[in-house]
Length: 489
Image (tube, rainbow, N blue to C red; front, top):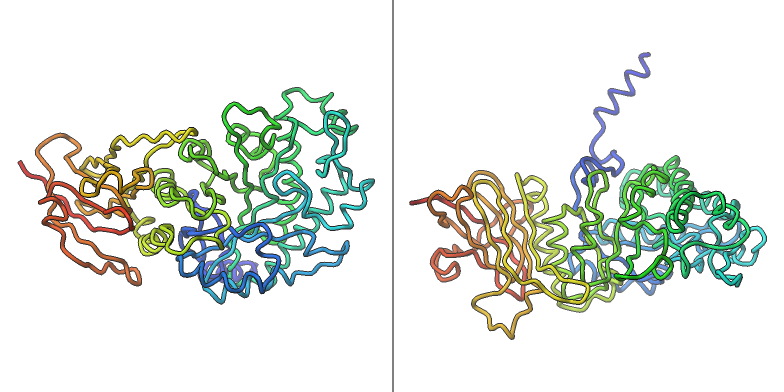
């Protein structure tokens, strides 16, 4: 009994750094504090060679990333069955630490983008033990069957070994804060796999083909996730490749972690902490909203390719409006010099404590349809005692010199009459939410956060606010302003 009580006391007294990264109220907690992932995902082959990646780290650091998403390939860590080589994981951790960054590891196991190309040679060459699927015409595919018991057991064993190794080499440092299980899982190019085992299972199934696929993929993933969490209980997630409008299952990765299949995935894979969307289509906000549900922490591991001109606006919308705890474009090592994402990440880095402490927040960006139709209409939100209206067309910049679809912002209510506005290319007007009297700008100042402390710059109570008519964050850069509002009339 005394030993048990002592253990409780020691646990209660343990520093925040000893806590494993976890979720609380859909927020990612790292070392005892909410953590906002300002991330980027490496290209699929970029983490396979240390020397190739070495010169890229400083470029990512200069873009103000705090987290890199990096693949871990089954074929590299288990080149021979039962013999593990974690050198490719160890140097990733070492190099991330050297640049003061966190890692999210992506497990490329039985499937990556629906295919089975990252599996070890001893798996690829033994199709009797590790059966492949066949298409509707009976032709073999380079896709492992979800009904292969040895495939599931071997993949789960390797994933468990990875998690055990992470605990051994990183359990006290938390460089690795999450792990993705498989990558864009889903079946192509039909709604479900075929073959003797699959056909027999489907004959007993009551439901549709895509639901059948989702059910079995989720159960396969659960075997890996459960094995991994028994070794080291880091947050785990899966990511879904989206389908174009009007496409049928199999024309996109059928049965994957998609919004319309979320209930199946959450039921059959309870060890997975959340499912996330990979978004490469213009209708970012529409797709993202499908994943925004309580109990499913919201994160975007692949937000189009690095260099996407709308990335900053999408990040502002995801974090400010949808409560995302992170944002990450793909192929981040190829981010162009001077890209606007870097300037946004610099602002968000300083803003993070205020973001989590705010009494209320809102995010703004122009909605875009799949067909690239942009809705530039102003948007409004009530925070505290005031209604804020955001316009995406800058009044002081020639229309042919600006792209409103790239503009966006975040509004934070700090308390009372005090607010922070961050972003670029927006103007904000204010009025009392109850319609009584008028709202004026008592104080508007530009500035930045240094070591968590607001350092004011210019006081902007003149031309920059159009003599008190609006708050303006010019296009072409990202900035933050502190605002105090008063009521008159």
